[in-house]
Length: 432
Image (cartoon, rainbow, N blue to C red; front, top):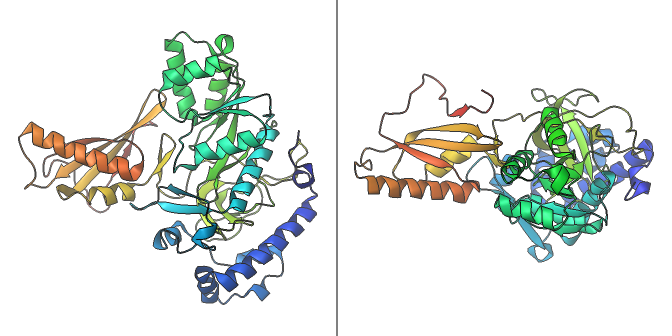
C-alpha cells in the first residue's frame, strides 16, 4: 500500500535527478538570500555554479548544531516572520534550545512524509491512533497527530503521563495503534498488568510506532510477544522537522523520502562520505525546507545506508537502525539531555558550587536522573527548611531548561569526588 506511488516507487536514477534539481535550486536560493549560507560558502570558495551534480554536495561545508545556537533564535531563518506559521524548540548542547520555524509548505511536506510512512505500515482510515508523545514545543506529538489525520485515522491526543487514564482510553475507544517512546510502552505494559489488563484479550491494539530514543530488536521482540502487537521504528529530529520516517511492513530499514531529504553517511573522524553498508555519522540536507534550511547538517546519529531496494517495492533510500550518537548526549524518557546543558543550568543558580555529578538509572522501563550538587560554603546550612527550599529551586530551574524532571541531592562543600584530569560527570547505571 502506497500513499504516493509515483514518488515512492520512482526509478533510482529519476529520483537522483529530482534530488539534484531541488538541491541546485536550494543552493542558488541560499547563496543569494541567506547571509549565513552565503558567508559559509564564500569561506570555502564555493559558488552555486560549482554545483553541477548531486555528488558535488561534498564541496559544501558541514552545518552544526552550534550554528543554530549561535544564531538563536531566528537569525538563520530564510523567510520573514510573517511567513512563519509555527515554532518548535528542542534541547541543545547548552542551556538555550534550538528553535525551528515552519512555513505552511514546511508543515505540508512534514505531513506528507508521515502520510507515506504511516501508510507503509498499513495505517489508514479504519485505525484509531493514540499519540502518547509529548505535545507543545516537542515535535513528536503534533507531528504524529497531523500525519495520522492526513491518512484518515482517528487521533487520541493523550500526550504523556497519567498512564492509568491512557490505558482506560485505549480500551474504551478501541485504539488500534499507539505512538510513544519504547520505554513508555514497556511502562504501560507493566502498569496494565498491575491493573489486570491483558493487551491481547482486553484491547484492540495491533501496532506501535516507537521512537525518540534508541531501542533494540530485543525490546521489539519482548513487546510483541507480551502484547501481541507489531512494533515499528520511527525516526526524525526537530531540526529536520520532527518524526518523519518509519520502517515499512518489511521492517528492513527506515525509508527516507528522498525527494524531501538527502542523506549522506560520513566517517566521523575524517568527514569522508562512506559507501552504502558502512556505518558512520548521518548528515542530512533538507531539499524542500523553507523557513530553516539545512545543508549537510551533522545529525550525529550513527547508522548506515542499506544497499538495494526494499521488498515492499519502494525505491527510496533506507537507513539501518540508529545505534547511538557521536557525542555524549543522554536520552532520558525520549528527551535529549546534555551534561553541558545541565552544567549551564546549574551555574545559573548562585548557591551552586563548581562540582556536580549526574547519575542515570532505570526503574523498570523508565529512566531516572539524579543530580548531585555541591553547595557553596556561604549558602550551605544545617537548617532543613533552607536546604529544601534551595533544592526545590534547583529542580525547578532544571525542569524549566531541560523539559524533564530531575531529582537533586545537595552535597556539602568538598563532598563529591575529585578527579585528576577530566572529571567524570556522568554515571550511567542503565547498562550495569
